[in-house]
Length: 352
Image 1 (cartoon, one colour):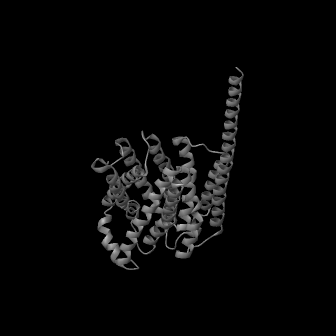
Image 2: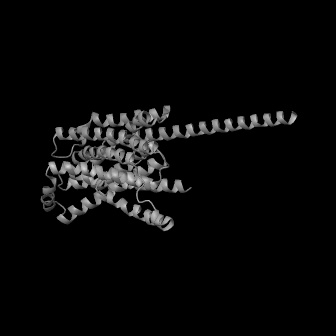
Image 3: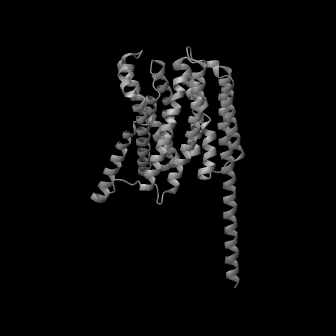
């Protein structure tokens, strides 16, 4: 029961981050923000927030175990692996920032729906996730949804933006979806390769290292691109005011951190594939919010893409339901067989 409650809690965090992250990033761009590395870095710079639950957990352990309570649980191998995943997360953040910069949120979100297809593929290759016919159907439908958008990519191009910039945003966002799909099974692999039971404290430590590594990667990009010098200039020319500029940056860091915290929690308490499925499920919510908040166009192809995405989502969960029923029946049959064999052995022993 406790595990289910924690899973639901992390799903809520992931939902807030997955819906709010693209919206707040788009808000940065539509009012005058022009830098790609800044929102990229903001996706992980909020990782020090994790120190709060880590500190609370440590003081709780210290109260029980005394001065001998361990401060850090993460091993050297997990540290190195987490730092490597962090670089992928940083690169993915950079690629995904091209979506809000060049595309309407509704379009970039639909492209990101293909993350599920790549998550499923890499989950099979990396953590040996079993896929059913329903899972494969889900993957095909999500790819078809992205292809539907690509066929009429210029239909919702923002005013004043060149076709080249629009297509660049489309391609970079799609590549970002590939890296996101790779990232999830790699995080799950870190848990699987641990040589002892992984606690949620260890999960938070792993997320902390991932966040620091990704932030360092993006900070280097900002330094090379001279983004730090550009921040005061952008703030002074921001259309909704300098104070609101900094508030957008702060909330961007906070909301994206919800997404990352929820992500590692869902993977820990369930699987990388479920986290990808939840992302696909949240697609219509983000779509509707983008249309309401930013008055974005909603053409027919977006409706088709949403339909295909939801169809893929339902297909996946129906397959999981059928697979669960099948495994339950097999387990029941196995138990009945074992009981029958035990009764026969008991009867034989009694006769003898």
